[in-house]
Picture 1: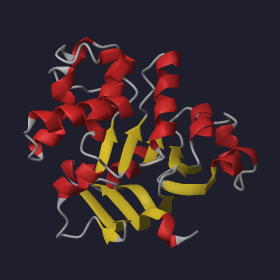
Picture 2: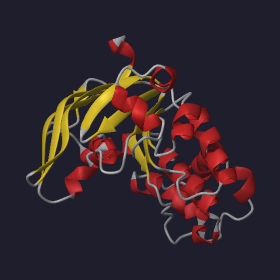
Picture 3: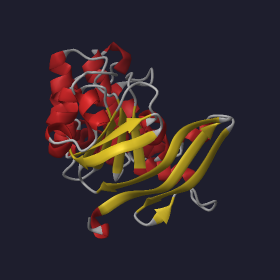
Length: 254
């Protein structure tokens, strides 16, 4: 694998919640401008790993982390790292849509505002561009002053994606972004994710094997805090090397 194309490098990463080891010696290189799916049964460590990529686990008490996570060659666990800048560069979209109880416009403008952009023309342009990139502009362009909470679940999730895009991240982490949505909304989210990879590196946790197969370029299979197998998605689903991978993707456990 060409190192120049690797956006994220994880080296010998271990994570403990108190005495419980949730991640065990994770070594994983994630390609730039690709969609990488993290699959595995509940409690296997995939969401925990996802949160290490923008240090969200820092918010949990009694967490101990060893090893390194490098983004563009810089260790994000270095004491000198600017965590605010890190989280601006590495956006997060959660399983349950979480728009602020504000207007659609203010939801998307929030990040640019706290980063010092106050000029209305600039904010207007960022809001429009971000909503277009999130494939929801045509649905909300005449409702920008409406409360985002009044949108449907799928629309709320796309507004949350627009909010993440508004600060121009290089990477977006998605934790089951479509699991609470109906099939039509899920399809829109998947189309959006596929479009975004042209300019953004995407790492997505999903329990949906069909979704992982449809949209991801590479897939990592987690089990009991370890990576069992990591390869091109086609190989993982058609020719897995490990019997445990085969058993999981065919529904024998999970």
